[in-house]
Amino acid sequence: MVRHIVDMEKCRGCGKCVEACGLELWVLQEKEDGKKFAQVTEEAAEVCHLCGTCKEGCPEQAIVIIDEG
Ligand code: SF4
Ligand code: SF4
Image 1: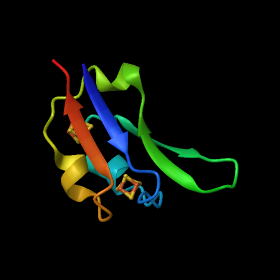
Image 2: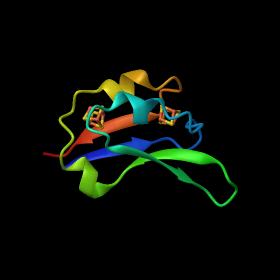
Image 3: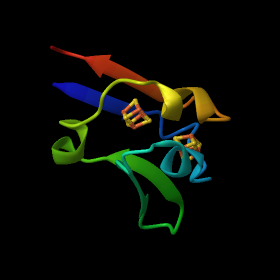
Image 4: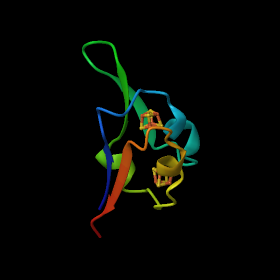
């Protein structure tokens, strides 16, 4: 199982990860205060092929990908 952890303190909802992923696994969500953040749902994460493009493309270094096997 692959998990995509986003540091909520760092993420500013820029959407670069959404654009970067060729499999379109990322979506932007909105918090109650209207601020956006990026997320990969558990379902979507199942097809992630660990290319790392989203992580590399994040200007805030907010993404950590964990491969739990
Ligand atoms: S690229 Fe980084 S800062 Fe931008 S939405 Fe994605 S996780 Fe957040
Ligand atoms: S590691 Fe690659 S396939 Fe997985 S979410 Fe990031 S860009 Fe998409």
